[in-house]
Image (cartoon, rainbow, N blue to C red):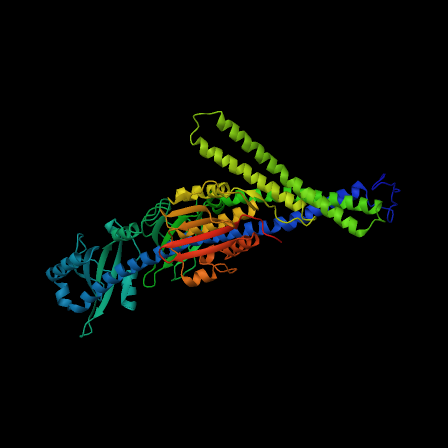
Length: 572
């Protein structure tokens, strides 16, 4: 039962339609629904993004593997076609350039053959065959005298088509070779066939020039799937391929195949237009998922951390919502006759207190850990850069205090509190702010010089806002200077009204037009690296605090920005 809220007893509320509106079960069901809905709405875009990223990465990886392989196979096919075309043209030229009687003379034929071997690599022998299929003259390492080829299939093909190029075969020569035969008909109507044998070792040299990566393989096959060259993975010359031939195409294509070992691989292939050859190159297909984990492990970690953070945040926010909802129901039921305005003010106060409490908890932990660091450093007299680390710890503690001041301003929002004005040591605030930029300055070898006047009077101002002013100006100076440049910070007691802070750099400087517009919102010279709001905000803060800001700049020489801060608090 609810008891005595706002000083008087309120009777227990009656159920609405038979359901207790403040029942714990009702809020548990509502909590589950809100958590489920918020989790789905929050995580679904992340899952969608992860899926899109995964498939895009898979497609990109596949393209990066396939495109170079496709180009390599196309270039190698061109090399093969040029090689075969040169040999075919050579045989055709000789068949048409010399009369039958000269070619039938083995001395003349031998002289022609020696020129051919000297100019073109790969020729093994050369033979002249008459229209009846009889071998009339031969130059080469074998004894072929008296042979007749009239019943050979290749002889009939060359008689019909005029040219013939065989697949790779052994024959009685006992080594892989191809035959090129060309028919020619003389002016007297007499025809003959000039046939040359070519050693296929040149095929192996062309394939070796592809310089495939480890695990890859390239080879030549005929259209029946018989190897025309040795393969590292699928057998020797004249062995049958262990997988089906791909669809004929004179363009270079890449398809997925399953190797005899059961592994997926990319097969790039192209059919020859003027020969019954097919050039193939096989490259093992890497596991895209494994590559995803190795290349994108950082994104996966961020994704999982993001999902965990969303669940935690959704659960906490839902608890706050349910708690507030329950409190609101209870308060509505217990104070239904109170003024609506009073209810709204109390709700704002509770919300501000809850936010401040949630923020102050991690701030308290940071403050405690920073204090522990300071104590540990103090206990070690031989600690390197002790003073520097102590200064950084002090800066952390100061930032914690600044965060606490922010929560106090949140609490004071309902009471219409303005910025917190307090006496500030400008030299201390500057030193603290410059400490945030020391690491980047050291990395870029930029010199941060200080010339801080002693005995400056404290000025009434808001530390968070004045620190933001200094940070914006110093960041702009650091952006403007090149590596190895100089930034100089000078403070001075200007007169009875102002304290001056001058930040000078030897960077690229600005033209008069840039200086004229630099305080305008969204004006920037950093292109896509800036929003154009930094200096506009800086100008607004300085004006709100009752100060002035002056700019002096020259292109190629640097920029000086002087900030005048009042010694007395601005009225209004």
